[in-house]
Image (tube, rainbow, N blue to C red):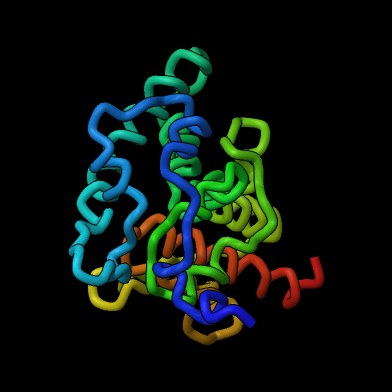
Length: 212
């Protein structure tokens, strides 16, 4: 076996970032920005310190919010502001965007030294963009609609600032007990993703509990 197969992801030859420009249809004037965007904070290039993509990630959320807001505002002229907000949140979501990146093969260009990242991208792909027709795929919306149908009240408890956790409780007052924990999600980088994880967990538990 070649020694290179046992080396970390950072030392394996990665595809040229020029191919990223082909995939997205845009040529960068400042190539260093492209390099920074594909450098995870775990990556350590021996003798050549790199800036990670953390600052660009912070900026990117704001840019994506603006882009989706503009696109959806003109695409759905009859949609109410609350519905537009929900649609935008479903698209500007860490996991949803990761699935889009995986579909287009962008994960192949990421420089990192975190083995767990290799396992996070191998998920079933949803559509690249959430539309009004498939918005029901949003975990929070799906959970809330299900609970309304079966007459269950939910309470979301946020521990996100302290631990990155969001918890979902089911109202048990009808049987003389306090609220019961039925779902939990954790994602320290983004509260919306943590809430989606918690809602998805709660939904799966409700399905089993009520045999829906």
